[in-house]
Image (cartoon, rainbow, N blue to C red; front, side, top):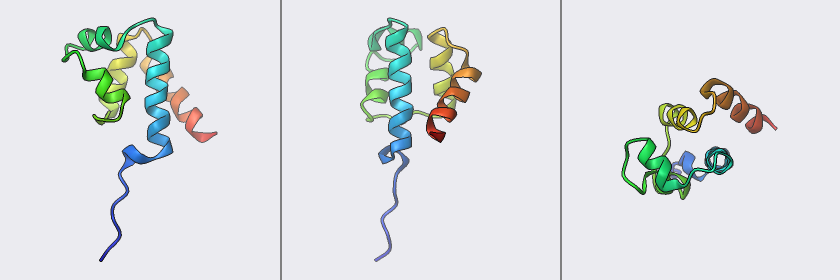
Length: 85
């Protein structure tokens, strides 16, 4: 039997991504439910991202940062720098 694939949602880097999103949301004083509504999604959309039930892609990350009032480009650079440490 071959090796089982390692899914990126189980990596420390993916955990750091989710923590980054949750921290930015909390700093903005926005609930998971409210951010989900701001994104035009179901009320559990952000909850599922933050608990790992739903995978977050780059486009969604950038849109979430924008909705939180963060500069998407600067947020991505900050995340990359965090991951490099």
